Amino acid sequence: MANWWDRHVAPRMIRLCCAQPQVMKARSHVVPLAQGRVFELGCGGGINLDFYDLAKVTHLSGIDPTPLLLEDSRRKVAERGIASDIREGVGEDIPFASDSFDTVVTTFTLCSVAEPERVLAELKRVLKPGGTAIFLEHGRAPDEGVRRWQNRIDPIWSRLSGGCHLTRPIADAYEGAGFATNRMGSRYMPGTPRPVGWIEWGVATS
Ligand SMILES: C[S@@+](CC[C@H](N)C(=O)[O-])C[C@H]1O[C@@H](n2cnc3c(N)ncnc32)[C@H](O)[C@@H]1O
Image (cartoon, rainbow, N blue to C red; front, side):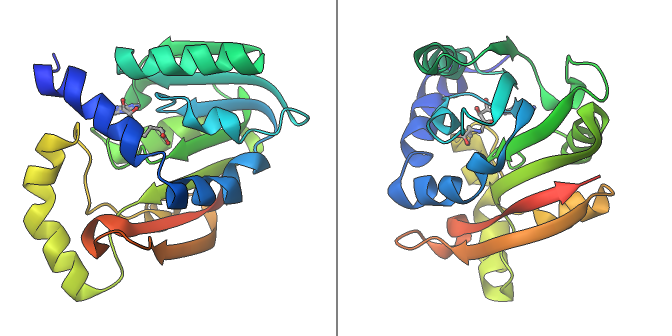
């Protein structure tokens, strides 16, 4: 059961942080690649709704465990008029059948799930053979000095930010889960302290 902070404060922080201009620019690199039947993990907030190419997306399914953020997603889906199935749920146990989706999308979500390896296995399960996983995540930086700071502040950061972690690998995690990964870009976000600002984006196939 989430505590008061996680239910009320963390979702509002997430809305603010996840819609900064440099984050929106990063979304524009990958989200428009989604096509066909799309599944978005951690769709809370609905921020990606502005970036889907509706000429290519035929249906959008999504899950998120945070009710306050799900309200935003449902409202934005309705505004854009996308055929959709948005449910409360977690990536460790995705409530959709195997081989259901042409594209799965995760943006700034693998940092927050409880069991990343299990979630990646679930994403692989629901993705059709030959389908594409699109990712844009923040996580473990390439520089040793930055990693040391990430390790130091991660315990307090994760308590304040709804379970988000700074220390998780991104493209390497997809590779470890058996995806062939094309990392299209990576950088420290400008204007953001390096320990919280390393992002990677790209596509992966299973
Ligand atoms: C930093 S927010 C990002 C939201 C959205 N994906 C975006 O790009 O703006 C992290 C999201 O992960 C969701 N989340 C946390 N644990 C999760 C889990 N186990 N499965 C799926 N989503 C989860 C949170 O509710 C939250 O909406």
